[in-house]
Image 1 (cartoon, rainbow, N blue to C red):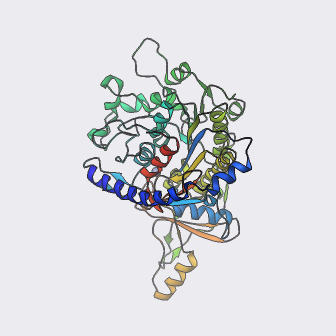
Image 2 (image 1 turned 135 degrees about the vertical axis):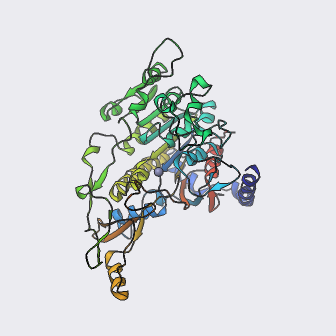
Image 3 (image 1 turned 30 degrees about the horizontal axis):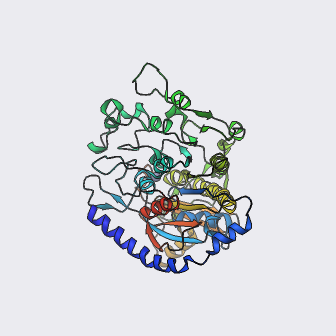
Length: 487
Ligand SMILES: [Zn+2]
């Protein structure tokens, strides 16, 4: 693994070196971005260095295009797509049974770990090394050591893989609370069993307990159930994880109103759902993609078109933009050093697994609104580096409308139709768009699988003049650490 990884690093660094020479030439000249931003808001800018990492879970180009077509038609663009620097990001995972080899389809645990640590690992792992299970230091931990404030915001349970990887270490993403850790999981490798991580076996304890005691300034998301469980019995305090978090100084808020009125001092734990937060949108009459059936003559019966609508269950839940805005206020309040903040739009992925195009489009829309909040903040604080990226690809594909399949059927006198699950959406501009999910068997496949495509990185802020067009997720960690001057 070391050899292969080093080759990649050398190749990547060689291209950086070439760019660095050019960058050195231009170093004496002001960069357009930083000076424009400084001149625009000279009085409000501070010298603090900040990083905001936005992760759209499962948000590859196909999922972005689907949402953009639905929302803005052929001419529009998301706020993230208007950021000035853009790279294509390679996604890699190692094999747990042989870490010298790669897997080309990853999961949120290993990819978030790579973004957090700058190191590759195997699927399911939370900032620990493949096979060896050694803890790998995260950017959040390194930032804390240098006096930066830190925050994690997600629409998932905070114990879910992406936020967990920035502040916890576990052999598997399932080690969310002590209750989850006792049983042997027959489908996991021996080296990834959660009982290895129990404190009584010399491990760090559950992800919830690790997050509760990690001294993070702002934690906002879901997962009340995982925090409302006993800690591993080690002393006579008999506190549960939530009480332990509060004993470590975290103030608990559980409603949108209490979040809005929380004062910008002290550490904050916002838990707004038992598990993941409800999603913002759903299909009309709760419709998702459907299987295509055939009539007695073998002719395909395509599902009728439908639109998206607001999900009534989301009412009262803070939006990702609300949580991001609050986190930015809390992290920047009277702070001369700066901060590291990770914001995750988690359910783009979770809704794609469920073949729910409206669910994933609504979450992508909400994610982009959070990015807008980040960009507005950075416009006033020019030492802020924003990177918007995804962890891995997903299953949704834009495919031809029924009329194209029907024309082909007529031409060859054989029914032509897509396999998998299919939906025809009535977009906001009135066009129709067909979406298909076909990465698992129909109908018995319970959920869609991730895919292995590159993901985008949209970037804005200082120090981005030399970023190559093709990077991998370790490079994103490198850029963030460089900006915060971390080892
Ligand atoms: Zn997933």
